[in-house]
Amino acid sequence: MSSTINENIGYVEVNNGRARMVEMEDDICPKSICSDTGWIQAAYQSIVCLPNQIIVRIEGAKDDEIL
Image (cartoon, rainbow, N blue to C red; front, side):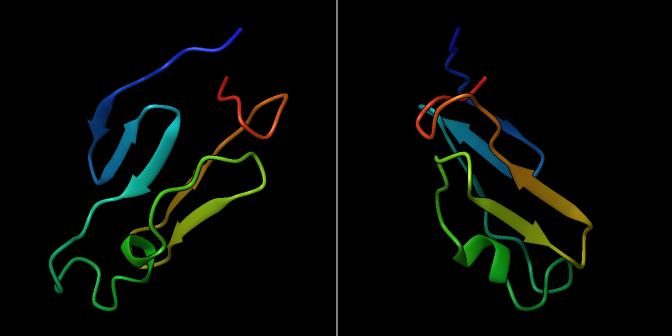
């Protein structure tokens, strides 16, 4: 079963089966490495924002499926 979620959850944007960190101000995330990562959409990809202790991970049965 797959579903499509399109929404912003704080600093995480989810759209069409993929996710990314939106750009944050320098005082929140000084180096913006997490937002520079861009969109992820496969089960083996992740985004980590250490200053804010956020991990974005896609889980699914297939590389192209979000559960």
